[in-house]
Length: 115
Length: 117
Image 1 (cartoon, rainbow over the protein chains, first blue to last red):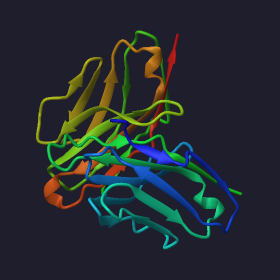
Image 2 (cartoon, one colour):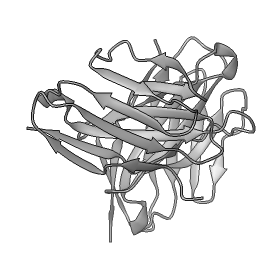
Image 3 (tube, rainbow over the protein chains, first blue to last red):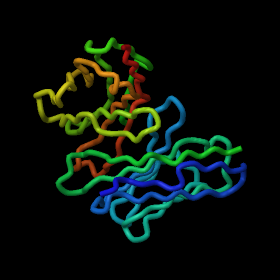
Image 4 (cartoon, rainbow over the protein chains, first blue to last red):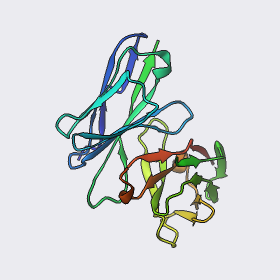
């Protein structure tokens, strides 16, 4: 078990470009979450999946953001037409549905810098 | 909407001493879960301790314990015998019970804990 992995760990892009982040959860975990964290702040909920179904999405989330989990395994988070305000750490976390203590297992995050 | 508030942006504690981090939350639900997560510098967030709202007994995990006051909607974390490795950001988090139909976790803004040698 290698834990939750995220790729890339760092991404620098120019304003207006599209970026995609990938998250590989712990293999038996069927829930997967995306959070955004800016410096000095707590994680802000973006969306979560149970298997391949996207069950909830933050109302604050711009339509430039889209997430997928096509086969209920890995997930991608795409940001289109990036803006400087999108600069943040994007965290992925996973958890079990059954036998779940409620613990979220986090990856190390993908840091986005928009110039 | 549920909210989680951590009013202490930063705390310091002397090594081997005890420190308490505060957290309050707002909810109209009666069943929910509360968590404390630790985020060391440049490392991933890990669970420190959890508490089910229906349990009156406060959770403990080795040097970590909570003071859960349901009526006051307060959930503080006590760290005893503080160690240098305890230095990190600590986040309080809330999740509604499974019967609510949502499994979204709401986090506070965090408290940075410094441990002084």
